[in-house]
Length: 640
Image (cartoon, rainbow, N blue to C red; front, side):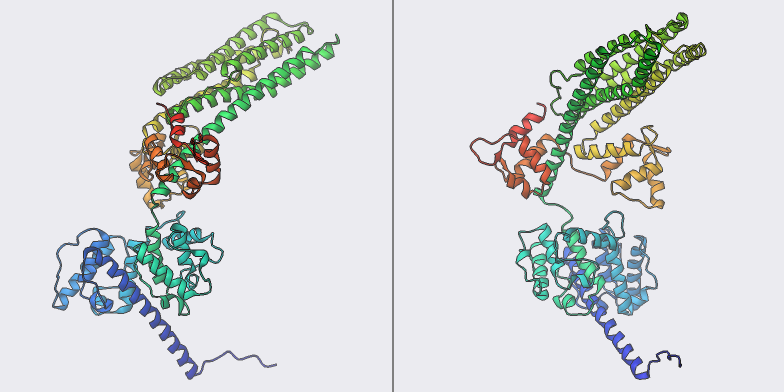
């Protein structure tokens, strides 16, 4: 069997391939030359500079090139030959332009001044593309991707709701014109009726998008319809250049969108506080029920008079202390902190303070808790009365130390739970509690020594205390955590209070992000934690930039404080939501009416859950169906 011979092109077929390549090469050159010429002219018109008609010829003397760079670079390149007659003058002009481009961090491989002066079209196109990429496209970033990937991701996200549009590249995906129409309709639905388009008429769709963009959005027509629709594969660089103009045109939301975002963020903060309040009430009610149920079980319990029964009930009681009781202790501590955090949060945003319903206050909970402690003592004593032969001196010594220790912990918790007033005063109080906790470590060591003696004497029960070393160690660590958390929380709230340039939602987001990445609870972030926190917020830095940025931000320290983190975030965010801004935002959303409707809220692009929340909480406007009095609502939630 003969092996198949490899294909060898004939001279004629080889010539066809070469001719086809030349035609395709010339096609993209022509489209790029036309597109880049229009792009250059769109920039020159900013300074009323005479536009060019021949990119290859009119760029070669360096004059228009320097003028272009001065406009897009927003700086002067200094003196140059404005009317060069000799070749050396043109070379000097072009060299000045190329040096400026390189100074801006752009590499111009294999492009020299002589290439431009000699009107090498391919190299001129390459240079112009490099300029476009650096000054128009490079600042486009989505989730840390490259400029091209970021622009593509932006297009995909904006056109995702349109079933007929599937943006996969900057060539074929744009040939039917629908992607251009979708971008316009997504941001300005008043300019274009997307649903009425004939999806099969690519020329009409493309022409419509180009006309609307030029007329209403001030986006220059860099492309002709045939450049997109009538060639086998549109030029990628030309499409990217034109689409980038859409990105910049839509990069800033209009007033209604900004107002809607502020209202949404405000509603999110209010809903967050509302959720915290209802969570507090539910948990307090459940904890009280659990405590009362346990007391009922003990009250109905009876001894049969045997030692084994007393030991069994003693084991059950100890099991309760090491499991169920500890959960309740943690829950009570968390509820103390939760209520304090609610009040601090509302005070931070100048909102009305929260008053728990009657029967669910911390005072009510403390009464129930004291009843539990009393029931525990009674229960434990009734068990211990059945167990004999216990060495009283060791028992009393241990009980006295343990009880005093627990009282000290309770006193610290009581001070912590009753913190109120100015944040600076609260912080000073918490620091004093930290000092007091330090002395309790030595006390616990002494209690552990007494406990070891009790175990050696086979003493298992003690009528004078319900606390074991494990209990005390657990509660001591719990109190330490509560004090440390409260200290960090107050310090961060002091910082947050001064950060008036951030919205409540931003503060909430930045605080939770900082706490998440503060793994060791030091209230600081090292360079890796800081960079990871920024990445989770969609802010990325390369390694070369980051080291210098972090040192500058922390004054050379190895750890960044919460305040430094927030100050840094201020530099990359905006939007301060004040009562006046919110009132003005509601007014804008309502179209200057004294009331706002559900339709107004939905038109401002608020999420459905935010619209539902506002409908439930805002008072109705008198005499208006489906109207809500936003002024009365803001008066209710803001102080003064």
